Amino acid sequence: MSNGKSRKVAIVVPFLNEQENLPLLYDRLAKAMDGQPEAWEILFVDDGSTDGSAQWAADKSRADQRVTLLRLSRNFGHQIAITAGLDHVAADAAVVLDADLQDPPEVIPELLQKWREGADVVYAVRAERQGETWIKKFLAASFYRVFRWLVKVDVPANAGDFRLMDAKVVAAMKQVRELHRFMRGLTSWVGFTHAAVYYNREPRHAGHTKYPVWKSLQLALDAVTSFSGTPLRWIMGAGVVVSFGGVLFALRLVTMKLTGQGEAVPGWTSQVALLLILSGVQLVCLGMLGQYVSRVFEESKKRPLYFVKEKVGHITAP
Ligand code: UDP
Ligand code: MG
Image: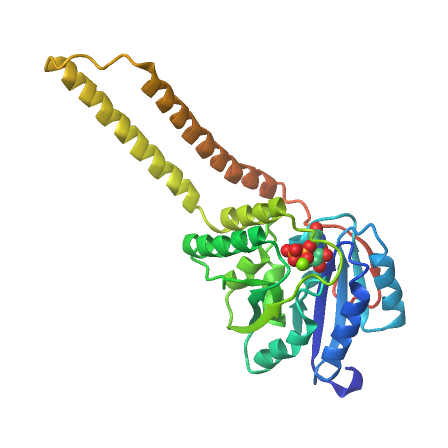
């Protein structure tokens, strides 16, 4: 390999409209990586950008051999863009990095150090989140708590997609082809040796987030439904409790009548209230079932996860 460096690290950077961030990202990455004993390359994944970022990355790729660009045929979403990147990695390790500089490239040498010491997956755990709205921080904190409690897979709290994976983990991930994918969960699920590095999450360098609250909620829902059937058991539990309560109530009414304590007051308020509550519960349960059914439907179609529009630079993997 080049410069007599024996091992190579690929940095996978999925982006959607990040033209103000890519040039600085490249500079900071190059600076952080040049001192490392491993050779490196950047694999940009254009997730359907409509600004000048894909053009910038293509030009960069023609100017710098170490830069390659994979362009998806449209916007497929962050998780799929990461997947596409990992699918095209040919290196001894891969690092997934956001393009907005919220994941500081200067942390990568620390990830590499843990990898050299033998870890197969090195998470970058956020010690602090700057420049994010309180609602997002609150949602993130509650999500990790609920997810860890629900799912038997041990996903470290506050580790985003910023992480290093050894080639064997990348190979394992390539075999997981489900459509609704929560990459953080999957890297835990595949196993291997894990280690963590702590860092401060910086505010976005420029541009605005492509993960509004509703998209984050959708990711959370995907995470839960793709890793756990527990909500289905809750539905059953709720159903059992509610029907048991109903039976008790009916029994009480009958005994009241038989023992001459009078008939139940024919008030309709309580009935209407019960009706509303119960139909609400039923709708929620149906909705939750629907979430799983629709995922079964989506997965059963077995569509490809993404399509590649263009490859720029030397991408060796298929
Ligand atoms: N991104 C992407 N496709 C999308 C949405 C986002 O490739 O559909 C990229 C985005 O350009 C960035 C990373 O994913 O590099 C994380 O997105 P963002 O910073 O908007 O999310 P946040 O950090 O606010 O959760
Ligand atoms: Mg961001």
